[in-house]
Image (cartoon, rainbow, N blue to C red; front, side):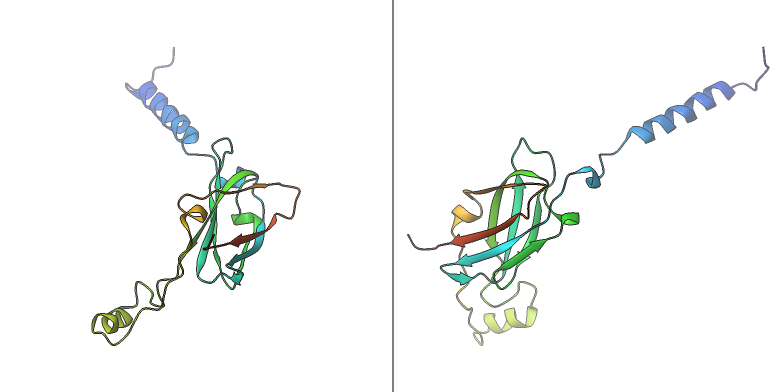
Length: 155
């Protein structure tokens, strides 16, 4: 029997236990997801949509994060590195138009409060395209995943 200092065995076991615990912690890196590139166009009442964001939200049976990108001049593009995972997604399109004044533009907000400026009419996208979206698309790993969304505000 080897004569070790008292507490030595406990120290080795404790260090080994911590090493095993640390190695097992954490979630899978996002690079393990089968992400795909997505691009396309978005129109609202026939006009290219400005100042918006498009989100691809995976359905419960699809494992992976959601992905979003700005829509500018009616176009959007998400490269595969930041794209959504392959599978079925709900698509949300939300306006980021705040009536011509950005929420953090203090000078413009002061002019608005003083009556020196008026808000432009903000773009209103119906809830069936954003908070209660009925849009859905299936994204494939072996496809271009190019989509055209034609939104309408009037029935």
